[in-house]
Image (cartoon, rainbow, N blue to C red):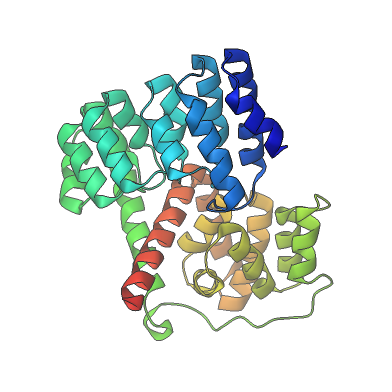
Length: 332
C-alpha cells in the first residue's frame, strides 16, 4: 500500500493527486493512535506535500474527514486551518492537532470567519481568548461568551454577558459558576469536598474488561453496559468504563460519582453519549449510595435533560486541560 501511495505521489496529474489524497485520508482516518509513529508521519507528509495542488472540493473533504482524527499532524492541521474559510472551518472548530501557536497566528492574520470558527472550539486557551476579544467582532465575542470552554476572566465574561439577552446571560452565568465549582473540587482533598463514601466493587455478571471488548467488537454498547452495572449496584465498574471512554483518570470520575451534586458526573455521562434512561439508573443507584431521597435523583435527571452535549464536552475538555497543567507543574 505504501509503495502504491509513493508512486501516486510522484505523479503530476490532478487525478492522481486526488487519488493519493483520498487514499491517505482514509488511512489516517482509520488510525487509532494520536500520531507520531513512522507510518503516521509518512502519511501526513504525503498529504501535506500535495495539499496545495488539490482541488477545492478535495481539500474540503480532507478537512472534514481529518478534523476529529488525532493522528493528523499539527503541521498538516495548521496548513488546512490557514486555508479559505469553507475549507478550514471543520479543522478550526474541532481539530485537537492544532497547536496554540498556530491558532494564534491564524487569529492574527485571517478573517473574522476564521476567528468565529475558533471561538466554537471545545477549548479556547487564555492567551487566544484574550487576543480574540481584542480583534474579534461582536459575533466572535458573543460566541466566546457562550462557550463554556473558553478561558476568559469573570470580568471579561460579565462585560460580554451585558450584550446578551438576560435569560441567556443568567443561564451562562449559572453554568460557568457550576463548572468552576466542579473544576475546583477535582483538586481538593476528599475531606474538603461534599461527597459520600468511597465506592466498593460488587459482584457483576460481566467484568469491565469484558464489557469493553464487547463494545469494541460492536456486540454491545456503553449505554447497555452502564445501565446493567447500575442495576447490579456496581457503580465502581461503571466508573471504570466512563473513565475509559471519557479519557479522564478513574480517580477523578470516581470523585464526581460520589459528589453530593450531579454536575460533574452528568457532564462525563453526557459527553460520552449516555442516554437519559441509563443516567436515570445511575441517579437511582447514586441516591442509594449517598442516602438521598429518590426525588433528588429525579431533579438530577431533569437537569440532565437540559444539559447540552456541546457544553458537557467543553467542560470535560477543560477538566483534562486543568489536570494536564497540574501534572506538568508537579513534574517540573
